[in-house]
Image (cartoon, rainbow, N blue to C red; front, side, top):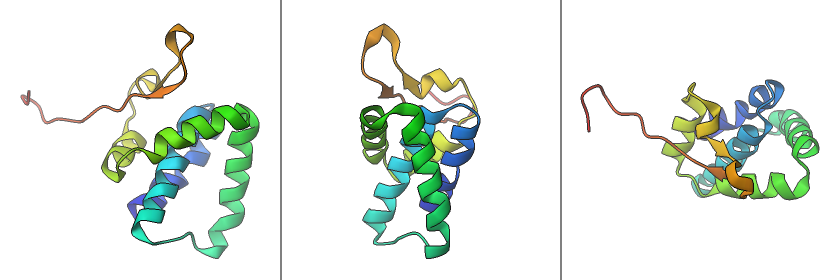
Length: 114
């Protein structure tokens, strides 16, 4: 269920102008579904393909593939944390210094934790 939910958030992220984050979420969800031996419901496939096509068109094939691969390397726990993170989007995907985009995940801790 968590993998499916992460995937479903990629479309709204893309719609809000966060296509990089959407590509990472799709990559994370696809890999989690693969590891779990699961797949998308056939009724969800048209929307999935529409979202992937939109993100791919916005980013270009090469950039999409890089970000998708970054997402695929995330654990499901980190992918869920990324999907729920409402903080500064720059912490998630950074292209600072002209370097390749990188996923920078953050861990949520309870108050007072170190």
